[in-house]
Image: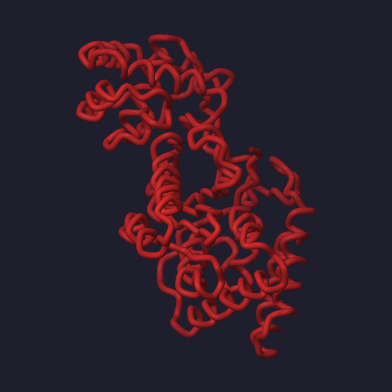
Length: 369
């Protein structure tokens, strides 16, 4: 799975005025309905929300700043209120904080098929946990949304915050493309910068670290305690594994943790998970505990960990100029042209349609200068 790119997402305070939010909801509802009624499958609609470029352009059409972290929360909030299973065949559940945690309950109320509800709940829980604990990049998930169709397709859009930098990072998942929840599952990771060091246990290069972590929890917990203490003593040698980055200190959130959830370790020892995904699903198996297992695997057993940030490039660093990576102009063109066609086909009053097209034109100008 290739990652699509990044955007600059500064954290902005304040609220969307009611007059704007009401119009955003109306426009979102009309646009999704036009897409479905003119032959765009619900499956394809969900794939588009899993594309960071398209999602960003869609938010601009609705009337939000292209570079703000609020685009994520406000656009998904508007969609949640405007798009319904009975009228669109698509629904949106989740949101900030407690709303994100209540996704399983919302799914139980909306989804009639028990099997589908179970699959969607698993997708919600695992995607959130992976981006909090398996990919450790210094951003904590505070906003989680699941978009799904009545025929079982799903997309996750969630956002994390780095409180020290006051910037956000967005994570996109397209359900049908997820072969493994714990190995390169994203359709895109959207952030303000490429971090120097990230504990990327979702990488293919970290496959042995994941396997060794599963093996470690099959050991008696008393042995793991000794290995943790030994690893703390050997922490300074970890920079050897960071070449070619050179001598560089790990960020504090990536140090060997001194507090580990031993109850979760004991539960894993009793359950004997067969694969890493089952280990991650255990309650209490959070970032510190998974990091401890990975660092023991690297320090004691010499397995490889991928310390590279999965973000590929950033608009904030001059992506349109090809630095450090070029923007995919073809994909951006496709997104903009598609949204133009949807707006022009929508049953909107002339003023609303003109405003939406102007916002899309402004986005196009900002991209291509």
